[in-house]
Length: 110
Image 1 (cartoon, rainbow, N blue to C red):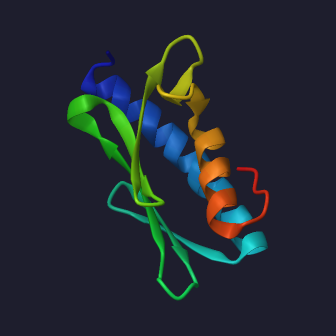
Image 2 (cartoon, helix red, strand yellow):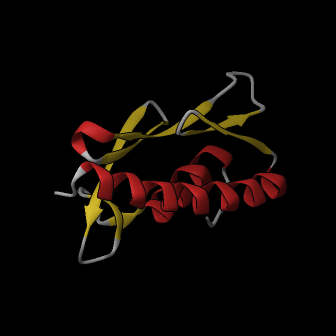
């Protein structure tokens, strides 16, 4: 397991890249991206005012995504050099692509 400083450095790098990519995809696909307080929120303009939240959970050294009435918990994989969803082996960008595609009903690549 990463120590807290290593975790913080890795998630900050990942979050910065992810936020930039989500901003670009959001412009194309019609959703808003907000960042602050160490988390990213994706806001959809639908009747339910759907919101995805991506945030670090430092005590367990994971990135958590709250989306589609599910909590996705990604831990650091040295082998893949990425945060990975253990159940599926998907990297963070692959999880985001899948859940955004599911929410929007169209293929999205993050």
